[in-house]
Image (cartoon, rainbow, N blue to C red; front, side, top):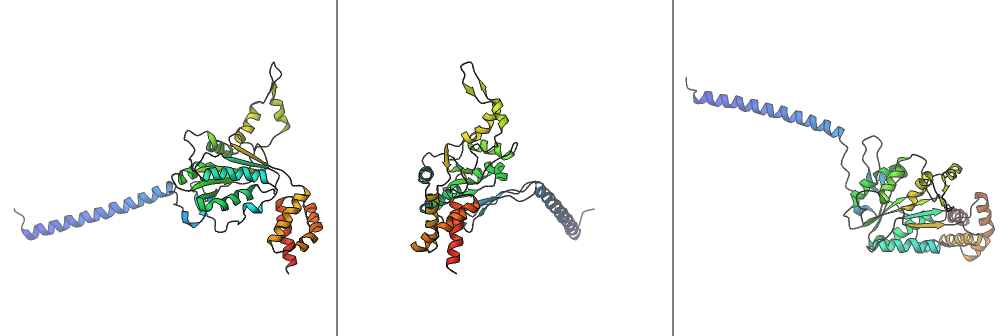
Length: 310
């Protein structure tokens, strides 16, 4: 029996309703599946706001699948190269290397080692302030996040800026994972290091790993009496060797320390008479702390100038 027009329309409406119901069910299941996949897969790297600053910190949320991101630094130390006294040789080396890098010329990764408080990290910050207008940028990475160096390099690759990855106060204990990650990032990956990235690290240790008396037992001599380090020693110096430039900082003499004190007291508005009168107190301050470093001089100047201006 042929289907009349009203019956056909009714049948088509029912089929359409069934199709819409199936489509809604399919979309609901698809959304649920996507939600489950998003919970499993790590989130994509957030695109940094490159115009938000000249320095960034690599942040990594807690949790197994947390992905790191670059956080702009809101307040940057205003220190200038002219504020750093009695490290002329070191300043010349770092500034020269940084200038080559900014100008697109060959430049080296740098390891700054030596006495604490003598201006290692301050020199890197001063170079940032000096060359920021020419496209230099700084990314500070904590030792515990060095495993993400490859991700950071990929994130900045292709950018027109020049990036210094800054690792401050770097040292490792036996077996720490960041040690090998840094070795690979410096010179050991199958991929070439991006030409817009350098690594600057500061440390109180020249070889970045603790050195023990037992390491000496691994040294051996050949038939000619030449001394050769064993595998343990070779491993401990292998990371330092991958930095193309080593810059060493030494403890300041008394006159150097007083010169730095005078500079910062002048910075805080003290006159020549006040600076001369503060010499004895400045030496006592350093004696109490067991150090005549630039950091101690800065701390004394803030304390003394603050009291003088009350």
